[in-house]
Length: 348
Image 1: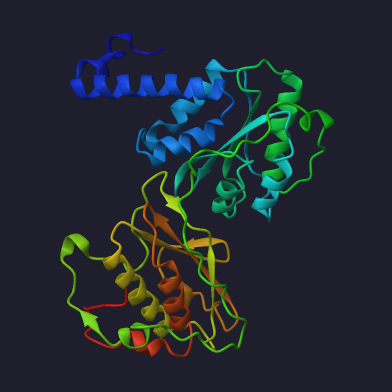
Image 2: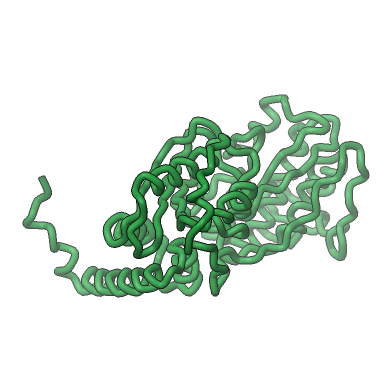
């Protein structure tokens, strides 16, 4: 049973009181917009981009608006399997004009993501989900009372799509007044996509401008407060945006210790230039928190693909980062090992 004596404790302080008032005002505004047939996820994306709300408010807003105010139905699952093509889900559910849909995806690195599955740009940013991750699907008809059995079926079908299944689509899903409306403000910031990794055996792409000789130049070691985590162990703030996964093909005969050290120095240089961004490395579907593991496993050989993504708010230099990582995974990795051991390359 909740302790009633501390129920209003947060309101006893000015900061807590003001934060509560702002949250209540935001909730009322969001309710009005959803009643006007705007998708909740698209509205929250806009408010977050404008810094009108914080990401820590997302779950409370979803629960109040969809779980309390409007008659939405929810279905949750730790996914028993995963869909191989997430954008294809958007292609499918964008035809479901009979229901409004919202997905709450608990990303293992980024925290809670609230997504309109009919929004193809937002769905493309998810890139993929993994087995056993938590997904909650909400289905409703905005302020209108919908058929509970139909909404339950739509929510279940949406979870099945994320699980990699092919659910039966009822004709009622397709007809109605819940047609997808393009949001006024895009919820996903544009990130220039790097070029795809070349095929195995292809010649490494030449670096432009200062890329050719940049690996030779070294900057002094950064001050302790800005020292990069060269093994990709930097903390990721919950709710941070992340780019799609980009593949880097290993063109060396083996991704050995020299390639690992080259990647460490490349990522260290990127982190010095962009201290608020985090480079996340994946291999074989698993996040690599210690790059040395890529060498110790002995599995990353010629032709293997290592994936990476960048998380943060104002993401940039991703194409250049991919170029350097490609070179660091090739036989030309030695260019990044020049200079004093404790120095940071000036690459970005």
